[in-house]
Length: 350
Ligand SMILES: Cc1cc2nc3c(=O)[nH]c(=O)nc-3n(C[C@H](O)[C@H](O)[C@H](O)COP(=O)(O)OP(=O)(O)OC[C@H]3O[C@@H](n4cnc5c(N)ncnc54)[C@H](O)[C@@H]3O)c2cc1C
Image 1 (tube, rainbow, N blue to C red):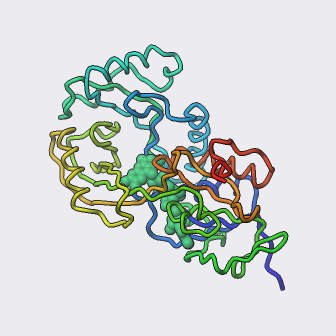
Image 2: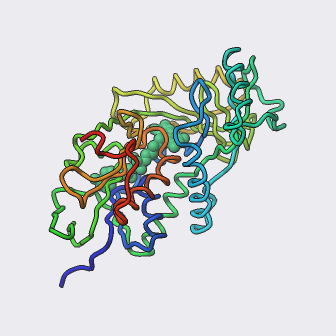
Image 3: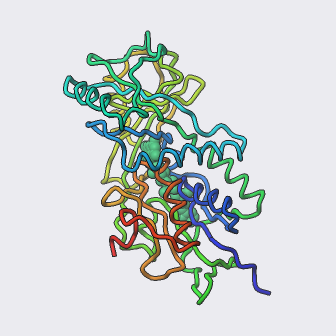
């Protein structure tokens, strides 16, 4: 007897595959998730979502479109999974020099930035030993999404539904028929790869320009940092609760291992010392590989080899803000034949 035909096989359950699975579920699609389990870059990331980035303090790409979508999406996941997932934290951005102070004042005068910038100083920074000769400013609508909590709660949900397979996906077991694809005992209409940096070794997507960019971070404990504010300085200092903070991160192209390095730690401690002069102790040191695309935009769409095989890839440094909206766009393309935004369409590299 043939197995039931499902709509989608999702390979990879980092933040991209996880968001895709939830959005597929909302649409009433049948799906299963295959992931090797354990480590993912999405669990190393702190899940920070920040609408104002760079030295010029500009709105991040597509912020006005992404933010309403992701705010609703993560709040809805939080409710559905009965798990605290999205934490709103104003981000205090420390100004490095007088020019940046002028840039910020210019942004503050621009109505397009009003919903993202605050001109007031929350009191919880008083008494915090920050290095800030030029002061700083507050960014609103910044969040931390608790990746480990979201990913683990989602796995429990998929296991309960009987649609989670903890295994390494072996592409040599994939066969494409005219109207369906087969993988071991599974039969589906579509397969979507959400493999993070590992997409570059998938034969269906070998030519898309995704490279691993290594990032390291520290987990510290301190009683001298604010509990409800993210600090953006030489490093980002992000509150995790219980006096623990995530401190990151580094960027390196040469090393494609997930081992934390002494150089990475030294660099982070040096930058932390130039940001904060209170007491702390290091609890942990993490490393992960960002799936960086050549033009810093996500890469979504079909493999040039098959219209049944798609990918949600290239999330780079912003998987937590980009993946909800673009997972939904990909589902619309796969299920409803809607267009994919040219800037993220895999076809731009064809
Ligand atoms: C130090 C650091 C800090 C970061 N901070 C942030 C941040 O604050 N905010 C933010 O938005 N982003 C941040 N990022 C970037 C973020 O981590 C990525 O954008 C995001 O995790 C990419 O998600 P993904 O689901 O595409 O890939 P991944 O998280 O890598 O997930 C891919 C999944 O696919 C699975 N997989 C791959 N191949 C197979 C296979 N053959 N069989 C089975 N399973 C497979 C893997 O096991 C993994 O679970 C940070 C990254 C680093 C390294």
